[in-house]
Image (cartoon, rainbow, N blue to C red; front, side):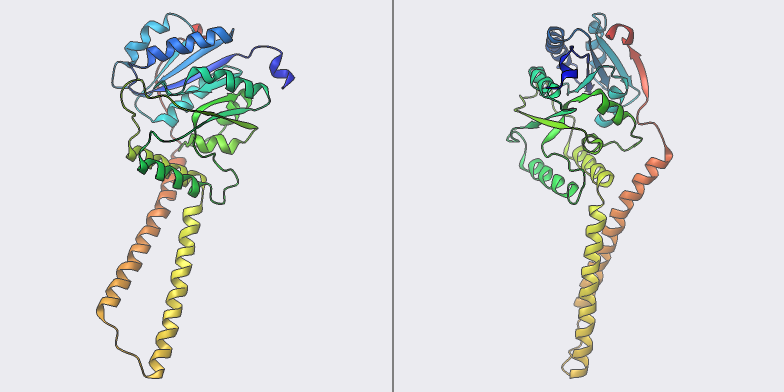
Length: 319
């Protein structure tokens, strides 16, 4: 036990990004409010509306009058990473709980996460017990993503760890100090370090609607994560280029020897065409990988804000 964390009950901020969650948010807010009211004297729930196109804003209106709810509406859909950043920037608690709005992050886990925090963990993240509810394509892609992004990394990202986590105030301030425009939050959690602890859980089924994360969105997030937190693709392709160069050198030596031994046969056009197409493909793929990194640099140097806020209400009554 950490004596400084057991002396008094901490204040807590719960950050919930929401995109088209009009059906599940009222149910979540009722469960979460009851859980926080029973455990904390000072608490707030920060809802970040990430450009929802349904009745999410109308569903939240009655809750704003009850207090303890702060509502932040972004000017458009900036993505979950930006919405999390907006909520973290405005959270005021001694600890900050990040969770989704689809009721797959149960408030009942707060006790376990808070216990780990009291034991000295600055960051308590949750790990899925299994991925049986996901398609084999997503499970395979997730497995390979973590293998690639953690290859040679000095700050490995825990596999199967999501955004459902409890952060100490010092971790929150560290995240707020990071200037990246291309936000890959799972990587940022790992990069800032601090003492961490894992809590295993089995996520329940989604309460309503479908996930807004399509395979295309997940692929884009994976590319952002790879280009933001590892140079492995560049190093891998450098190694591929070196192997191809050595093979070409060996082939050239073999052709010279074959020529002077008198047993050479005039090569066909098919060999030349296949070789040309293969090396052209390798070059274009190399340029594409390099272009992804250059594109990230371009985004960073423009220094545009990560998000823009359309409305911010409930701040005075949320604490």
